[in-house]
Length: 68
Image (cartoon, rainbow, N blue to C red; front, side, top):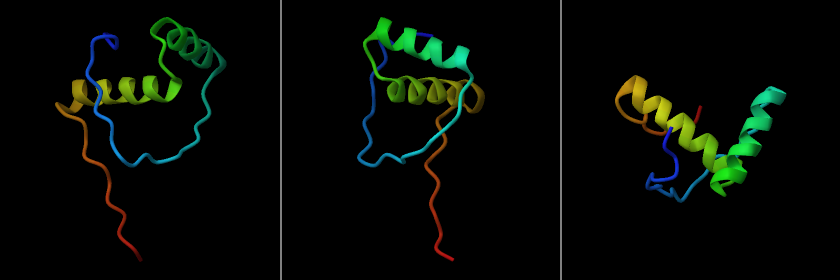
């Protein structure tokens, strides 16, 4: 995965979320964040975006919430 040379699109709105990850995954994210000097939020966004591109051809558009 080539995260170092990627251009980053910064969106104005971010959705706060909370996820629970396995300890080994947390350790890897911490190690990777130190290696690349990026925070975990950046890494998770980059990894998920890359995964979406590989499996769907593009990053899916953000969901629109319809009021009920």
